[in-house]
Image (cartoon, rainbow, N blue to C red; front, side, top):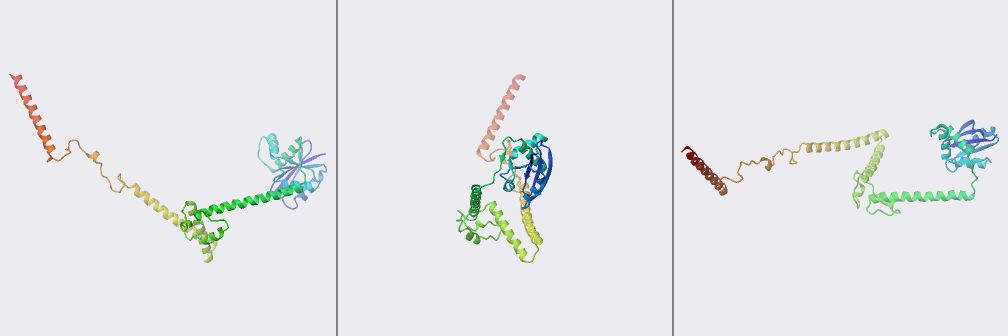
Amino acid sequence: MTVMIGVDPHKGSHTAVAADEREAKLDEVRVRSGPRQLERLLQWAQRFPERTWAIENATGLGYLLAQQLVAAGERVIDVQPKLAARVRLLATESINKNDAHDAYSVAIAALRAKTPRMVRAEDHAAVMKLWSKRHRDLARHRNRIACRLHSLLCELVAGGVPTRSAPKKLSVCSPTSTLPARSRLPGSSSPRSCSTTFAASTCRSYDRKIAQGKTPKEALRALKRRVSDALYARMGADARRAARQATAGPGGQPGNDSVASAAGSHPETPALRPSHSRTRKQATTNRSSSRRVASRFGAASTRRTA
C-alpha cells in the first residue's frame, strides 16, 4: 500500500500526516526542529514501507528537511502552498490554517497531482548558487548600511562626510544637550535631528545615573521625571499663551474695546466746526430758506381769507 506523508514545515516544528491511496488519514506526528528531526521522522515512518514524502514549499522553508530526506534515500515531492490551500478550501470551505490540517492537505494535493514535482539532491552548481546569493545579500546589506550612515551624517554635517572618515567624525560629534548636534556644526536643525540628539543625551544621562550607583529602575525613573518636567513646562506655556489670546479684544490687545469711527458717527452731527466758514454759510442759507417759506405760506392764507 502506497502511503503519502504530507509535511507542514515550520521554523520551530514539523507536522507530518500519513494518508493512503483513498485519501484516508492514517496517523500524524509532530517533531521539533533540530538536529534529530530527520531521525524522529524516519523512526515514526517505519510502519509505512512504501512511502512518499510530500513537503510544502520544499524550495523555501522546507528546503533543509527535503534535502535531508533525499540524502537519506527517501522519495520526496514538492507541493506548492497554493495547491494545499486549494484542497483545504474545497474540503472545509474555509482557509483557516492548522498544522495537522495543513499537512493532510499537502498529502491530498500530492495524491491528486498529475505531474508531481520531484525533489532532487542539490549538486555543486546549486551549492555555488547559494554561496553567490549569500555574497549578493551581504553586498546589498553593506550598501544599505552605508546609505543609512551617509544619510545620518548629512543631518549632522552639511554635505555629509566620506564613509571612511565617518568613525572619526562621529567620535568628535557628541552632543551634551537637547539641541541638535548639527546646530554646533555647519547646517540647520529639524525635528528628526532634535529627537535623535535628545535620545542620545538621554542614554548618556542614564549611563551617568548608573555610574553614580543608581539601580536601573532608579535611573529610568529619573529620566522619566526629567521628560515629564519638560513636557509640563511646555504645556504650561501653551496654556498661558492660549489664555492671553482668549482675553484679547477686537484690536488684538487686552482691554481694547474701542468702537470704530464709522459705526459711531451720527448724520446730525456736523462734519465741520461751527466756527468754520462753510458751517456759517450753510446755517445762513437754511435760515433764509425758512423765512421765504413762511412768507409764502402767510400770503396764501391772506388771499384765501379775503
